[in-house]
Amino acid sequence: MQLSFKVIAASSLISAAGILGVANAQTDTVSPGPMTTTGHRNDSATTMSGNAGAHPKTAMKHPKSKLVAQKTCPVMGSPIDKSIYADYKDKRVYFCCAMCPETFNKDPEKYLKVLADRGEAVEDAPKK
Image 1: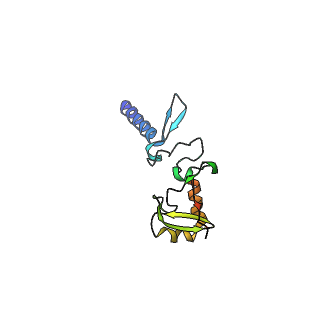
Image 2: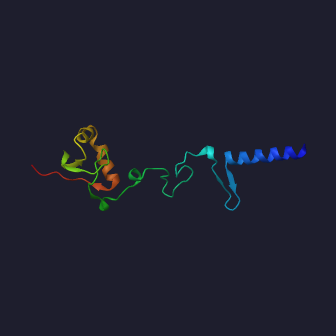
Image 3: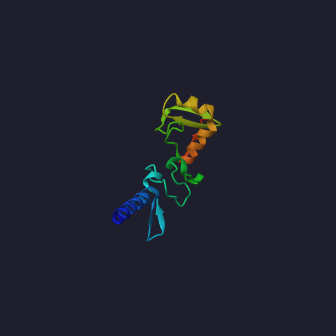
């Protein structure tokens, strides 16, 4: 009887360690158990920049001197088609499809910021 109690107690401890997390004796850290993660690479990790789990395209900030010519649509993120564009505040912004300029015109500053955050610069609109 006493032996079966020990086996049940040991099984309970092993199950609890798997659910709650297991301490690592070498590093004194606790690894999350299977019930606490969603499977995403950054669930339990914090990066040095403080952008844990942030999408790389939106987390990246580039100094103005490092901007490159616009390559992607600010609305969809797809490659641009230089025949589709809108001029805003003396700047020409290119898009991937004919539907994107309408979306851009609803909040142009938002989409210009998206491009700047990606490290892309819009070109000057031609003078009239």
